Length: 160
Length: 151
Image 1: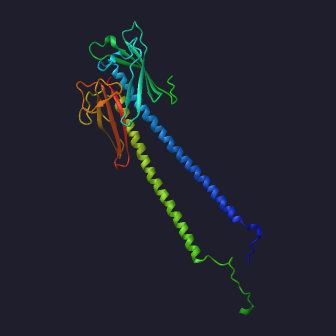
Image 2: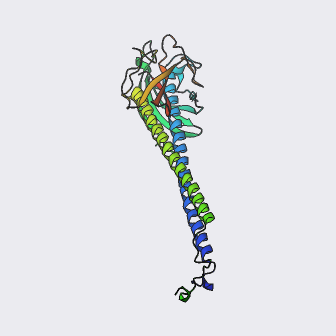
Image 3: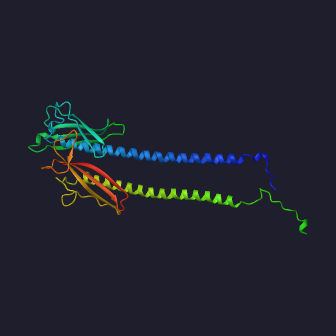
């Protein structure tokens, strides 16, 4: 017959507590990992939606700036001396809103318009483009357009 | 002879498991097994769904880039199907990619840009194209909207 020694009293409780603590930590770590993944996926989706909205707004702004319609006329967007430049905005059907501002890079001796557009979502710039509108050779139709640069900004908004 | 054998005394520590103990153990193990199995089945289902969502997402974005950036000629007043529609890239087995909707810029709006469902005459050079990729079992679907500019 096995005799239970006094020293063994409570060992089972310690083992059980160690077991519970260990698996509690493991489960907590796994849950934290899963939460991080979900959060990263969500952030990635939001950033991608913002970039698509900015991209759409930018193309919209460029097309507007070569169209005589609108109030004021799109052809005045970024014209030399046009301060402030026209502001464009676009909201995609999912509700992501992008705003495009522009800055004239033209000089008084150039008949063409060189304009720098910046598309932002919220206050964070997402895309910056420099565009040349060939107003001098457009004739009666919309001016031809050259996109000189198209920069996707960093996540902190830096576009250089 | 038998009287010489030491008498075995059944003590509590030497006795086997009783029926209630075995039943409780089986019940606990059974519940744990069912819970783990359920978790694994859920994990497999969610994983399958997630994989299809990711594939559909990739296909939708691939089609968006294809329509916008591959040098396809801008089609004035493009339609969702027929000869006046944009060509889509070959999809993947088990998925379909389509353009269910195209909206057209009205030529004047700027803040905000707005699009209408009927094409103005002439086309104003800006279209909002909706691209949808769907798995054949209908469990996953992804939508991408792009704005296509002429020239």
